[in-house]
Image (cartoon, rainbow, N blue to C red; front, side, top):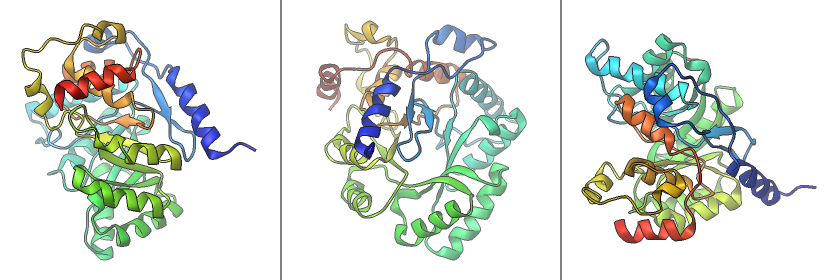
Length: 309
């Protein structure tokens, strides 16, 4: 009989080899950016594979329908899906970003290609029920792939509600999220006490503390990991202004700092996918390239944390 630990080890080894998710050559930006294969990793609770490069919506998807930014976001989604991406993360409290995402997915006919993740961000059961109904309306769907309790907000109320929605077939997976180090101890306690499919947490070259306890625990307990704030809200780019890429960057297929920061995160075997947000098609193409080619070894990861910590 195969144990969970054996299953995880086998799955992670297989995923490191990479799978062809498929891409289109219609978009010149993507064709030029990445001729390789987009890696995937399994969701431990089911074995379902998802691409390691996903997308977020906080900030970047705050736009007015019909505006120039909205039209650029259409191009962003085309690059993303043509490049083999599928995971999109949003929330009802991202200043209307979920409405924009829902409209774009509907207009482009991309909903069936999307691993759609959203959140519950409410203080009571009644508020959560109302918010959930509104989220489905905004996203133009009757279910999502992943429903998360946002920043552990009233998780003792909202996690049972998420489980009910999962039992009703309204979501395939449930989880919890946080975004700063102060949330790590409570997140660890929840992971030890509750059965989860996913967690979402920050992890970056200048904020690697999740690797001390949370990421090993996720691997041991069979929980998928989405990584947010991989650029530390842009602070990492300021740190490397006028700093050349490491001499070994070409060995891992990295041609930009954006790719380097993303590849740092996905090089941890417990990380399932990263979800950077952008409103620019060229940056979306660049980010996707981070999901191709070799990953960083331990020495390379340590060099980055030393440089940026």
